[in-house]
Length: 331
Ligand code: SAM
Ligand code: SF4
Image (cartoon, rainbow, N blue to C red):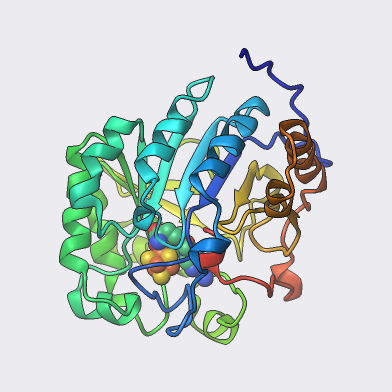
């Protein structure tokens, strides 16, 4: 059957929403201090979307003009259907960009199959290059494997970006070594400001480091950073150490929000369309899927989600979402 493209709706603020981040699971093989509590309980399998649900939903997002899909989690490489899901996305009309955010632990065996399935870009969370600090932050001992995973991703031809959340009294000593990676590799090393979520807020409020002071420390070491491009790359302001083949990205949702240019929505593992990372508003696709909704009903729900997308977060007023931790939304 030929699928007819839909008229593509804008949200209430005139933004084109065409980027879906799909949290395949809330489960993870690490327990990063800024992401989830140590004793986090994960969803039972029966409460998660099944492959048949994704086979129905992904083409509907394709019909609404979504051009970019990112698999995330929890840890998306733990999902047994990941390769099939990447293929499904890559085969949607319009040659969409398929990307993955991962802790890289499973990449040594998965990088090549993922690239073959159509994955183009990979963001690896790597907060420390020191085994002990890595273990303290991730509550898991896998730096060597994660590093091997990053190299495997590059060898497989994937575009690599690294994400680091800077946390006071945890990984401040990693700032310069992480930035120096951009002098050696053609990667973007991104510094993410820590955001507050349910249950973790005390930690996140007291340990966060503003990107302004990250940049000041980098410039004290490397001299003035050069801007790369005059627009945000996704959510990152991109700079370069003079002469470096790679770049540095500053993602500053707390001190320099990028809500005005937000083009994304999120699909959670339990079937909710999350309209803003930092707000509780969701559309319940799970209920519709389980009560026999047809494709037209589902399309209407997706359009409703686009129309209802909030303007942006209110961290500046100390308001943040209380209903999910980061691993349950997908970053
Ligand atoms: N497990 C994968 C990983 O770590 O890359 C994907 C899921 S993780 C939730 C996605 C991203 O969210 C990671 O880059 C992680 O560093 C980031 N993250 C988690 N908690 C955060 C927080 N409180 N503030 C800012 N970023 C956070
Ligand atoms: Fe797992 Fe990623 Fe959260 Fe770390 S940031 S606990 S790797 S989901």
